[in-house]
Length: 425
Image (cartoon, rainbow, N blue to C red; front, side):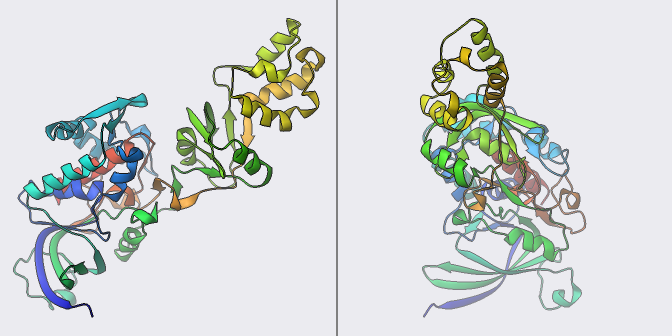
């Protein structure tokens, strides 16, 4: 039988719920202000999403970060925090810890060796500053000490304490039940994406406990799935990648598309998923910067006796040409361009630059890198990350309705919002 040790009234200046990127940055920043800091993490280790990010290399920021790289009901909300803590600020920290990094396309910065270096860097900073981190922590409840009835139940050494956190901590000695008092409480619990790495709705439930509005949430930076014939096509082409442009609801991205056995993925698809909702279509341009209709008609005008399939060789993968031929021009498979009417060539040519697809769904939170939506930014002071009507309560990172594009932007939001909350908590 597990031994239970009851310990009451542990006291800290700041308690951070969540030991991810945002939570650890908040803890480090607050500790530099000589605050007593406790970080509570429900998983068995800290920074799980950091460790798996960027293929294990951690795309920790981007050299060029602007507010238009983020999606939020209030597009201006992120500006203040991003100004407080810039990509260069985090790069400087990385360099101080002698972590080697490299810049890849679109100004993305990755560790040269391992994402573990970023986690170790954050842990070393915490350790040097005396931050206490408890893992395997089950939060049983959070209460506001501002409630007089509750306040009378506790003998306070410091009248500034505003919150009580009831937690159960498991370690080698058994299970400890703690009542933790703090002046400031920071919600850095993450969101719904990738539940195997600790994603949950706890932050939203806690927000609702304090009467904070939470906007509609859905999976973001996530692959698309299809049914029936299109799923079969994707399955046949699984593993094939090519550069494309995808447009959805007025926003377009140019990057690599990857066919999978369920549908399509790759950077361009993940980016597009942030702007797609069920029932929407997407337009895929398989030949960016190449007007297929105009060039095929030009070839016909030059009396070129080549088939459409052979004409496309060199412009796109042969396996893709074969599959598209089956659905777009099967009756003209062996016909030369000159034998096909201009009307038909226009129809076929246009498809290469605007292939309209109707995703059935996304792969959902299981593989989503982020969660769109979250705690309404109207509830939060953008300059401090403090809840406007709840003194000492802060919300940061993915739990807030701020979502970045692919490419290091979500990490930069985590660092910046965590830093900002840490300054004022």
